[in-house]
Amino acid sequence: MKKLLILYILTNAYLPLQAQEKHNTPITKIEIDTLKKREKDLWYADDVPPDVRKAQKALEDSLRKASLKQKPKREDGREEVFQGFDIPVWIFTLLKWLFYGVLLFGVLMLILKGNFNFSFTPKNNKVDEIISETTAIESAEQLKSIGYEDQIQRAEEQGNYRLAIRLYYLWTLKKLIDGDLIQFHIKKTNRDYCQELAGKTVFDDFSQCTQYYNYVWFGEFNVDNSMYAKIKIQFKTLLNQL
Image (cartoon, rainbow, N blue to C red; front, top):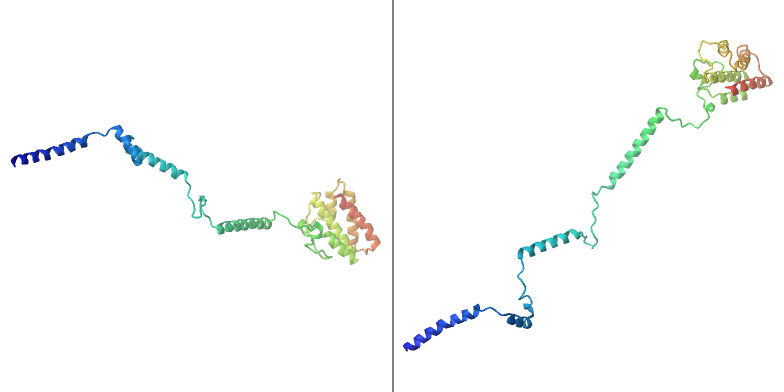
């Protein structure tokens, strides 16, 4: 009995040592190849273990590059395009009407200041002042505000040749003033104007027309149609020289 007990103890002590020795024995390449052929999932058995840090860095770099290349897409599958700030349409409309308002205001100011003249009416057709037998002429500006052609035609239609001749004479004075040939003054006489024109090419014609005017206007001579026609020719000849 005692011998059997000793044999049992020795046997139990040897078996763990044998198992440990068998466990520590390295697997040969032939055994690995045999396992690889038999088990396809062991294809990596003889690979070199990877560097975990390098593998992680490579994965992060790959993901970063992919995110930069990939453009955001909308839910409908189309690529999202950055369009900047979304400005409301009403702002552009407001700016447009403000621009039109400033432009219109500027044009109105120019018109009010007299920088533009939009009148397409002939100069002598605009009647600012009606001349009658009793109208006194007190300034050069007053002479420039008379519509001579219209008023002469009206006087001729009424048979008022005396007034028509006066209008022709005032028209002549206006032309002489515009040409800086005489200087208007309310106290000057017709003789004074003739003296200012002494030596000028229009002196003779102006003196003749002044004489006609003095006879008809101040002398109160009655003028018929034929006489008026001759006097009218003299005034038109003088006006064409001015």
